[in-house]
Image 1 (cartoon, rainbow, N blue to C red):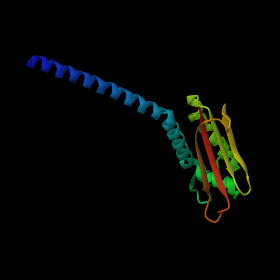
Image 2 (image 1 turned 90 degrees about the vertical axis):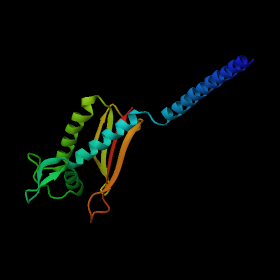
Image 3 (image 1 turned 30 degrees about the horizontal axis):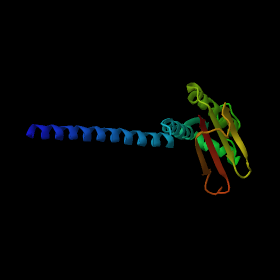
Image 4 (image 1 turned 45 degrees about the vertical axis):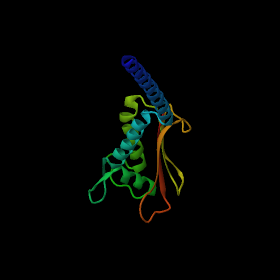
Length: 171
């Protein structure tokens, strides 16, 4: 009789273990499907690419120099373009906006075009309002994707001038 009761206990234990495993797999499946609907894994990589591109672009040194022969970065070239200040020397360029646009196109080509990514880039300003740069590669402004939208005051003393730098990688 003792052996029979031990067999029943082992049988119940096996049933409990099987039920626990089934519940575990059901919970894992439910939790996994809810996470994937929140954000695809690619969004982190796209966000990092855009943020790294913007940081590297605006901090990159240029051939432009001011009257004191100090080298300027792309953020300072954009300020020069927006505020329409007297242009500092930029190699063969006599206009900071033209230099900014050409350099942005070149860096976008080296970054996004190289990897076959579709993108939308718009750099605009307030006061006077207008678009400084508009680049798009098979991607419209209203397409879905991750974007970086950065309003930025250009310089102290020019608080009414705001730059909007908008980049989107389309999915």
